[in-house]
Image (cartoon, rainbow, N blue to C red):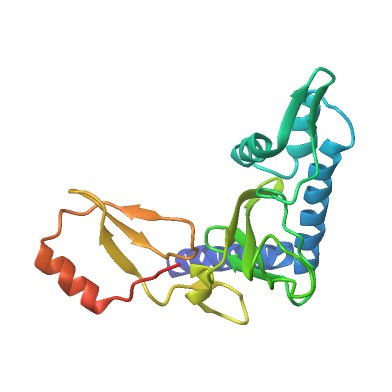
Length: 226
């Protein structure tokens, strides 16, 4: 009997170690992520080279962007004309992949638990040239799927993004929350903000808190602000 359980334990350990090794081997490098984003950006630019059918547009974008992201991007930039659909150059570029420099200024944060990658960069205002924007941050969220990376979200902020308030493990680059703020959103639920990334809310349902309990919690937690 002891040999039987020892054998089972050995098998479990081998499987766990093997899975960890495979996961480590498959981890994407920053350079691979940057290459993917550059290709995604070029797919967006190609929509302005000539008129396309909607099916052609979807074929160009499907390998890089989620369906919701495509809808948001096309709503901002796509024009329908008699020859078909086309985009035009603009200084207003929401949902385009940002003009990342793809060097040490472009940062990569990994949430390995949720298989989410955030790529961001701080863009200072051009002092010697007219600019539409002051100092600001732009960032892209990517999701690791069974078929590869896909872009799922974009954001722009003049303030430091909330996810930069979290402690980052320099070895694994996994984001670890250091402060969690709790706010009452309705009579039967509260939202826990700031868990891993700025734009995303993780909602948990609890019984309604009394005002005294809320004040007590506020005194013990730090408010995460943008």
